[in-house]
Length: 92
Figure 1 (cartoon, rainbow, N blue to C red):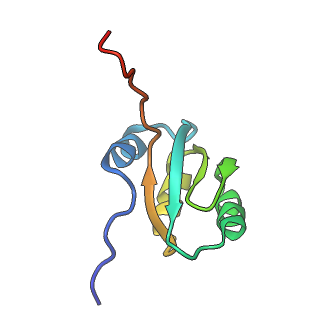
Figure 2: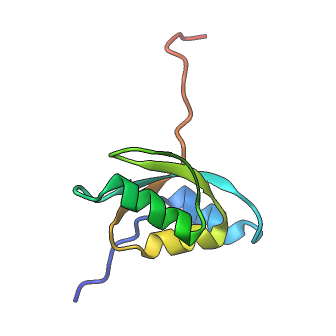
């Protein structure tokens, strides 16, 4: 059997390893296609994620390092990413 590829983005994984146990960070969980959004949000909340928003393509919430590790073990999770920084469309 082939090992499962890492689903947690490298910057979040670095944060997880360096953060204290009570530190918190925002994360975006992208479920595999066909995953029921309500089930995904409920499962993430049960693991310990503070769910802020849930939709068909992602669940957004706050996590501790341990919760992030547990989310990365879920087989239905396609990716876990950090929020993206918005950039101005203007050059200034």
